[in-house]
Image 1 (spheres, one colour):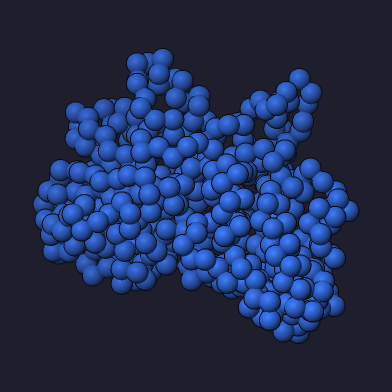
Image 2 (tube, rainbow, N blue to C red):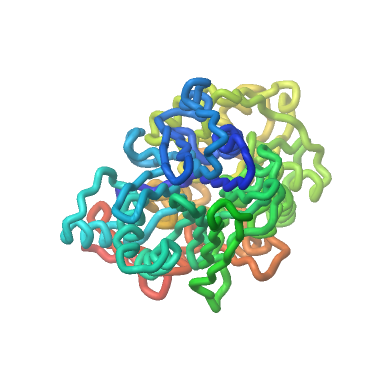
Length: 484
């Protein structure tokens, strides 16, 4: 399973008054940098003319004083931070994607992964389309522009496109006069709406609203199209078009709560910080330990560690110092790159752990790379015992909706039983959050989660694919392995 999967961050802004939307987009991307560190870009709309600057690298590397235009004639912009998981970073895959066609130009920023992207690409190629990238955004852009030829407006063309694409997607589309936000019918990927003065903003996470001084309004609903429209300079209006209304629960990727999102964000009414505190408390109830101190792996394991400490009564301590200039190991493409980054990313505080029984809380154990190294660091720092707890269940199944889990055979818990994992990790005990308690991370019963990477029960049909001599077949939302 070598197809590209992405977990990215998107931001869009429409301002009615004179506003430096380029700088605001820049600040918003800074707040979303944790969602992608390989490339970024900003597309600006100046009186209907769309221009874009993008490149590989971090936000502060791509945008300098001479590359960030300050033009108050620009009232609209969309921006994107990207990470790719299986391919070498390429500038051609950095977004936003800008398309020019006979009905005008369009810019698109995408977060997610289509499950029928390959089939749609093949169909479009057979009809004469020529692709310059291998990602889903270009497929979506082609479909929108093709449908635009026979639709009265771009939002109607998007509605028609939503009938064709399947899988996870949160999109921002900018036309010469409109800013449009789209979320897939299951709500796999987050997308929210904010108010900034007399204008509107959209983003993957609400933390970016705080960075630009915007007020959070609400989340874009699953299957909803939200249009910011302006008519010849009049006051912008926010129009909601519900294209799909699911009768079943939504399926927000639970990994947003456990790992990807910043703790200060609110996603689908859920406080990420509170959800992680709750995960830690559940862990303490499910997997208690006789210990002297609870520590968390920075950054996404810290909140769960505090929750474990509060529930168990074991004191919380700061166990590691994190090098803030090293990217997230989980989203570094390639195993050797991950291992190199782990070596210089964390350093234990010996005074916290020396001679003590330590409960170590990590957000997850995916490939085992980080966990093994961290436990070894604690042993070298003098920890007497290490009791490892994962704030997520065992990862056993691949993800087809945008998370970097391409094959079960890459997963630590899939390859090893509990006793082997205990030995390989060199820990005194090991515990995972139960999949049942994952569904209790939110106190809003209307919010459902996709936890297929733990359970194998997919909210919608994943693609059929072939990997290493085995066909992965999906029947009734559950995976089965058949020998070829």
